[in-house]
Length: 65
Image (cartoon, rainbow, N blue to C red; front, side, top):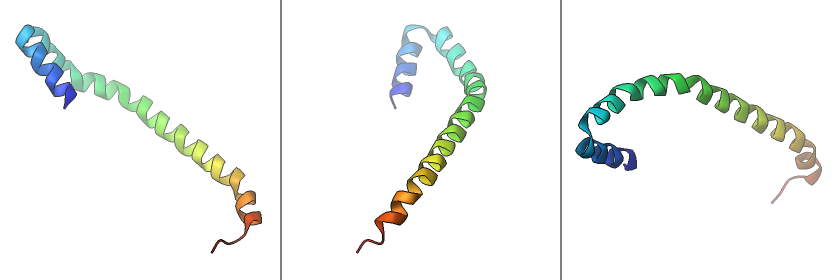
């Protein structure tokens, strides 16, 4: 929502710049996609390590209820 509002303000102030931004947005999105995938992978790796390292404490704690 905020991005759309900023783009509309840019459109009113400088429409050629707004059109260039509109055309270049997919290019920047495609260029940032590999970095997002790397971030998701690293986050999943750290979550897996945290689960593996926390498993002995869960086993020793026993069942709850």
